[in-house]
Amino acid sequence: MKKIILGILALSFVNVVAAQVPQRQPTPNDTLKSIQVLPDGKVKFSIYAPKAAEVSVQGDYAPKFGADKLTKDGVGVWSFTTDYSVRPNVYTYDFSVDGLKVFDPKNAQYKESNSGFSNLFEVKGAENDYQTLKDVPHGKVEKVLYSSSALNGIIRRLHVYLPPNYDEISKKQKLPVLYLLHGGGDNDASWTTAGRANLIFDNLYAEGKLKPMIVVMPAGHTPIQGFFMGAGDQQDPFCRDIVQDVIPFIEKSYPVSNKREHRAIAGLSMGGIQTINLALWHPDLFSQVFPLSTGYFPNTIAEIKEKYVSVMKNPQINTFKNFQIYMGGESDIAYQNNINMMKMFDEFGIRYKYINGVGGHTFLAWRKNLQDFAPLLFK
Image (spheres, rainbow, N blue to C red):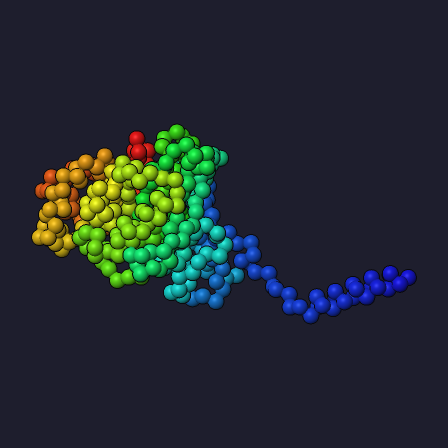
């Protein structure tokens, strides 16, 4: 009898407590799908913002740059559906609610950059196969901290991709290194979020197309004042950081080779200029060079012709095993700068290969560039 009474009292207590806790009212957001790839290939964007006056979405899914306006329904859900099919690929997008950029809380896929986060979505298909997550052996991505003497001892972060079966491979040989640089506004995480570099490498390894290597993705922006678009390595604090600190740190911390023929460097946009500056001013450090969607501005070309003729005429530049320049087509914002830069290279007798693709100044181009040049490395 006492057990029954105690049970009744306990149940009553629970009911009283429950009655005193405010119950959250269900909303349309509970079951909302913010991204839907429809059967016809069109993409529907949705966000719950019942008190908003204006909502838009913008991203590289669109054939033209600009924001698409969403329309509000009777329960506070704003939606927009493309009037065209979106080709298989990985795309970024950002919602704007009453002028404020808003991270999509219903989508855990994101790109990290210096200015915050953007969401990602994937349209699956055969042409996207090279960068999608598949059932293959996977490498490992590490976030690593180091102290930069070139930048007054500040603690910096970089990402390192280690190949599948790294533990076994590294016992048998010293690995070569690709230094992979991001663009302006992005950071050291961008190549493994928006860039899908780890998945691209995983899939290439699974196809037997790569030699084992590690990939180092440092942070190209620094808190030290400098000019990354200038000529040479001394104007840009990052260039000093990578030469004085990043490369020695990697060669001390990982079982990698310190030979020139086992180092390569690639970078996009801002990172492309940094790649060129590091390679041309330090041709003794790298054997393969891959600038993506980049080019010197006219004033920098004039500066080089006035002050750095001896650098451009260094015969070691023409001993690069690969000096391959990529562009994202005529719509790439760096297209004309690159044309001007290559003309200067021609004048100085610098040999290179040029590949003009598609995708503009976005990761739609740069992921394909990575897939293209990675199999050339260290063979």
